[in-house]
Picture 1 (cartoon, rainbow, N blue to C red):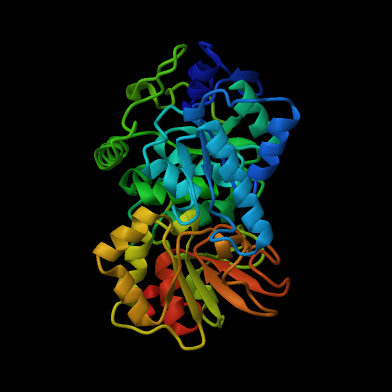
Picture 2 (tube, rainbow, N blue to C red):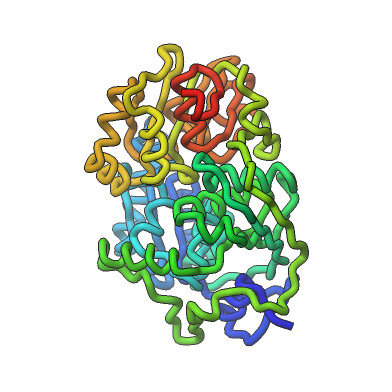
Amino acid sequence: MGMTITEKILAAHAGKDKVGPGEIVQVRPDLLMINDVSGPMAVDAFASVGAKRVFDRHKVAVILDHFTPNKDVNAAKASAKLRAFAKDQGLPHFYDAGFGIEHVVLPELGLIRPGDLVLGADSHTVTYGALGAFATGVGSTDLAAAMALGETWLKVPETIRLDFRGRSSRWIGGKDLILLAIGEIGVSGALYCSMEFGGEAISRLDMDGRFTMCNMAIEAGGKAGIVEPDEKTEQWLREVMESTGGRAGTVSDGAQFRISLRDLRSDKDCTYREILSFDVTDLEPQVAAPHLPSNVRPVSDLKSVEIHQVVIGSCTNGRISDLRAAAEILKGRKVNRWVRTLIIPGSRRVYAQALREGLIDIFVDSGAVVAPPTCGPCFGGHMGALAEGERCVSTTNRNFTGRMGHVTSEVYLAGPYVAAASAVAGRIAHPEEV
């Protein structure tokens, strides 16, 4: 029997010819990541076991993005601890407040390659599967051990294949596709599985949309999300390499393994736990109502819901195509006077590109607030916290009770088109309405 793309990557990093679901493997990761929430605990655990130096300073990234710019003294202390650690270890991949959100920054810097195995002390590390990498979140202590040893163990997950077929409308993006899937299978429907996204709709989807889909694999309980690399992946990597002079565009080159782009796809005779098919031909924009990402409905079912805030950004939808979509709706229009509208570019590079394209002018002219790159309001960390009973349409990834503020507040998850249209209408709205 053949292997899935996930099994191939894990086999290569375990130094084995073949692995199968349920097998425990010892693997050597290509990149490890901590942030200002998980990092302080990881640094303390690293020191507590007597470790002095990380296994490879070029394979550890530290990014300050959750409570930054520092919202209070405790956030400042956490950031200071990580700055000191990065400086002491001589880490070249240290990115301070304002550089961007980790899951936007690492790919755009060319630090993730097809075939890589990436571990991050953050659940949305699964984002990087859009590049054909196996990426997953782990706890701070597991990350600390990996920083010291350069290896860790993983259980090989089963793979669920999700095929998206048909040609969707111009308003449909990766957020709508992944919400459609989560609405169908539920928040534990892919528990500890690799979610492999494919089909003609995925082939047409741009890389930003693929990042969005893999980002929310964790919202279905997935261990990872992954897309087989194709011509779009290669073109995206070439552009990243040209813009950064980085290591993008190549595949894993460790001494014990090498995977070619040609082989980074599931074998025809591989075994899937399940194969699901979704027809997106007549799909309406999707919205996840409170208080689960699986409580998904077409936007037309929610048009009577008045809102108080809109957030466009995050590691899910803070890339340049997301800002272009929002600007398309907001250009020449004003946001509703009773709706606070926050636009948060996912990184400094995205912010700069939006400036060059005039998108920031559009947002400011519309009455929106443009913030520096940060996770901030997504998890109620700072900026954009909701008061009692307030409702928000957000392009983020979770809408649990109290996620963005008061326990009686409500968060509706949507793509940037719906979020921007709702900001103008003052209620949940289809983009065609404005």
